[in-house]
Image (cartoon, rainbow, N blue to C red):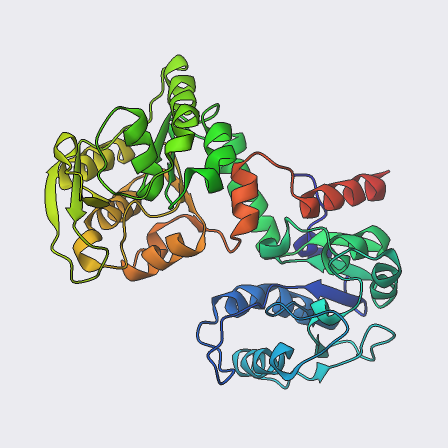
Length: 400
């Protein structure tokens, strides 16, 4: 993607003394007491912040947190816990500023965190007036929040329209590069793994991938619908019978290209959906009317693992079974370890996928782990993300 990169501006000495506004994704989970329970997104934002400080910029950072009501700030909406964690990680004070839209005082070499941007009236509707006020605060706008790249909001899109310079931070740039490598110019065979409970939630993704990939592995409830489409019994398993024709169309589109959607030949079933339910492995054709399919079987998992070993590029979004229950985690673990051992370029995204990666400790074996949930899915659908669109436009304007 053609966009100005913040790292290039820093390398060229164009950032020193400038006011830099960084839109980060610091939307981290918290417990009922407001304590941060997982700080991956904060850690992922550190390189951009440190890059700006090292370049001698006056640095402002903002993010959304939770789902606040615009114009009605509540204590639980505050980025105070984030400011504290940033301070610990950066080994320096990180002041938190409220009511910052009309002006921010920050000197070169200093860093301030601007309170929850989604509290600002007009943020979600991309108010031009709000975006212009934000843009007036800075000389350089840096978009480094891939998790929000699919939304055109004032702090993600509008400010990029009006800021003197708009560029991609290192995290966003890395996402661009990984996605381009995986989908725009992949090494073949290109294998996509799409898991999840419902075909309906990922139908457009499946349809888009059917025209691109050499193999489309489906898992979870999605696989059950494809099994139904193949005429296999699924008992009382989660599936969408009204989307059988759509599943057949995806399979046929793949077959027409000499590709395939492999349907499980064996499965792991239970009579109830519970962590202590008795797991029974059986052939797919032998599923009983009162069975729940909760995982692919070892035979299917081994066959898919062998195919992943031959892949050139792997895109992974979603587990293939109820991996949260150890008795039904075998398929997802086999897939995860096959990806880790594969020589293919691998990119993974989505909350459940990241949880599986963490569970099996393969973080260092996946080439790129996307920080975006909805944004990653929209990229898989073939959509152009608003963040990418506006940064491309601004790069063209700057070049001309």
